[in-house]
Amino acid sequence: MDQLALLFVLLLGAVVSVAVGERLGLPAPVLMTVLGIVLALLEFVPNVDVPPELILPLLLPPLLYAAVRRTSWRQFAANIRPILLLAVALVFVTTLCVAVVAHAIVPGLPLAAAVALGALVAPPDPVAATAVAGKLGLPRRLVSILEGEGLFNDVTAIVLYHVAIAAAVSGTFSPWRAGLDLVLSAVVAVAVGLALGWGTNKLMGLLGDPTLQVALTLLVPFASYVLAEELHGSGVLGVLTTALFLVEYATDADDVTVRLAGHTFWDIVDTLVTGVAFGLVGLELHNAVETAAGHWGELLTWAAAVVGVVVLVRLAWLLPATWLTQRLHTARDVDEEIPVSWRETVVMWWSGMRGVASVALALAIPLETDTGGDFPARGEIIFIAFGVVLATLLVQGLTLPWLVGRLGVRGDIGREKEFERQLAVRAAKAAKRRLREIEEVEDLPEELSEQMLRRSFDIGVRISPEMAEDERREAYRQRARRLKRVRRIEGEMLSAARHEVLAARSETGADPEVVDRVLRHLDVRSLR
Image: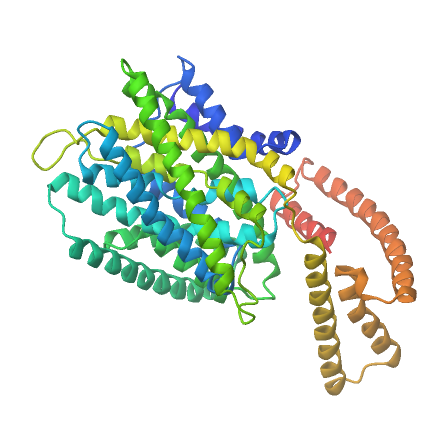
């Protein structure tokens, strides 16, 4: 098997693992990690030959962009307090605690290298957390916090990592210089992200074609990451800033085709890239095995100690941080999402899985220092990092569904339904207002006006039948049954039409482009 065949196996696994995971009730990223481990143990499967410095630029931009599409700037701003406590403060604390323990137990590990180890295992993986927690029916507030933490903790961790690596390679360290680098990195990234977001928004308006607009959204995350890194900024923060800008300002309510195509396209990208990323995590087992040859006992002990620190520090931080956030939470913070019970706090604690970023940063550690010597304890750092990722992904990832069920943590379905009903009412009222505006400038027949008025009401009722009164709700249900029957019959008629047109494609003299154009018209009609 060569590298290309291995890539196709991972892509196929990414697709299949989603369906298998849904049937077994297991997270797809965890299944892909297991697949990667199995492949790594097979002799005919080659070692992964991807330069470590390319793993983050290739995998993180699309994953982060896909994740940001599910959130908004308003949601992030409302949750700024808990996100900063987790994505910034907790990353610093975890890095410090891991560095102290690793420096104490690993012989020959300098403090700078220990800080690098702490930084690369500190951030929970944004993809793992949302992919696992998002499928369990958790309260939206928990998923929002986990998404916000996952999106922004890499920024803090990667900057800390680069500072620590520079200190370990050069042998010098300046706290003031490190603090300045952190600030400049954030400023440059935000500036790049906003500039690219603004430019992309303008360019999408010029392109016009939905296919080209969706294709542009695929290129933009990579451009933002690379440009921010070239200017010595944070590539992760650059991607996040660009994505948040586009989600906020590049959405046209009437761009139905772009929205539907973009949603489908990014669902596919998210599924494939996530699967490949976690498959690569499992495939890196061979690096850990090579490093551990001859002294498994020591390395497993060190890895277990760091896993314990990572897990326990998160719990020790979350308990007082949640209490503090609840105390600071006031009636004005109605949009802020916070855990409301110890059960939810426990679920947040157990959702702190490490993943792609930790493995990629470990593999990106330089081989040599500026003096020409080997980077201190590089093999040990890689083994410990892999141990942390594997332990948190497999143990926490596989047991999180059981823990959620055991604690009875579930989303507030009633609240979601009520919000859905409110949106349905607003949609119906907006449609009715627009109808009145049209009636002021156009002379509509009374029959048509009444028909349009009923349809404005139906817009809301189709979204949320609960907004109608009992009698009208029953009338709507009858109309819905009748409409369903009409649509079923129309669907069968359209299906017959599509089959006939498609059959014409193989006829002599048929123009495939014309056939495809007619098929697209029928397909669009089928979506209405």
